[in-house]
Image (cartoon, rainbow, N blue to C red; front, top):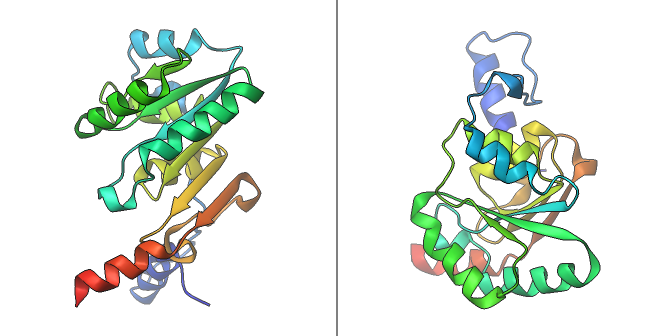
Length: 187
């Protein structure tokens, strides 16, 4: 069995004398976070609808799911659910949100890509009913917040960097085709 990245770090800390180490992540009470009223109001407008988060980008575009796939999924879900798609990401990923909106063309979108800071992101993620994301920091934040996720892996191995706690809340989709491309790049 491969060792998860968190387990590797725990072993390192134990080797240098660490004690009482647990692998479960937890965060401070979200009420302590400073969240702008504008962000709270945007999210609360959709309190009665299912909120599906789409993390459109990743540290490398090869890790991200193609926008066309997000659009296809959104169209399927819109037919079945009274939902709102909350687009999240950093300022560099705004072009992905624009591409999504151009291809999707249905109004049930809350685009906050590049509009939240690091303190506000936990608040937004906690308000989601589910997050659909590649292997990103936002995925690990959702795991710590106990928010349901569907994580999309192509360039990394989910058993090394995927969900490690509350596995009943998380669905992992692994398509290792990306690893073939990564191996070619290393030659």
